Structure formats: C-alpha cells, structure tokens
Image 1 (cartoon, rainbow, N blue to C red):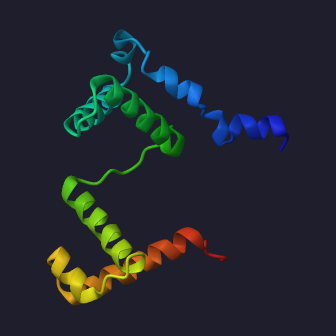
Image 2 (tube, helix red, strand yellow; image 1 turned 30 degrees about the vertical axis):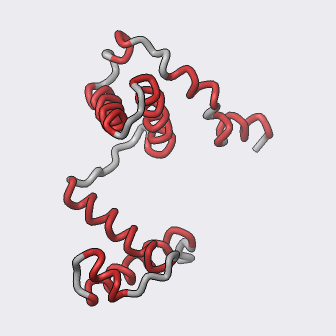
Length: 140
C-alpha cells in the first residue's frame, strides 16, 4: 500500500481539522440527517450538559463521539443492547478491571457489586475470555 493510500485510509485521515468544523454544521443540514443520527446528537448533547458542559462544548463533543462511532461502525448495522443489558455489561467490565488492574479481591468485589462470590468468579472468567479473544485471535 502506498504512503498516500495509508494516509487516506489511516487514523490520520480523520483529522482534528474535521472535528473542529463539525460544530459549524448548520441546524437545517442536521435536520436532513437520518432521524436516529439527529437523535443521537441530541441525546449526547443533553447528557453532556447534565454533566456540566456548556452548550457549545456539548455539541462539539457530541459530533466528535458520532464521528468516532462512524469510523468504528459506519455503514453497517450494529446491536446496541437495552439499558439493563448495557448496565450489566459495563458492570462486568468494571468488575474485571477492579480485579485485574486494581487487585481488588473477589470477596470485596462481591460486596461492592452486591452479587455472590460465585457470580464474581464467573464474570472474571467470562471477561478474561473476551479479553484474550480480543488480543489473541484464533489461529484456526
């Protein structure tokens, strides 16, 4: 692959300059975006405002998040779980991080996350399998 192709397709192709101008997209243009895309901008912006960001900061961060999301899954459908399943998945990732990076013991994790020690061990085992699969693809 030529150096020019790498630049066109690599991470650098998604330049900071593009992100700096996303907030300048007129509202009438945004209204022509698919309904779900506009809804995501509104949802992200509202959440960021609740976290204390100004309106312009929230808008810019929202556009940046959507742009990053489009790099990851643009042009294809992807599954977004319902809130309960998402909360459980986030809890499981955090539990595994507490265990693997912070050295929190399983009995402490059971107390912290209000689940049984057996469940903690099951989550750790599942998360380790996910992590291994992510960093070490299958050979056959």
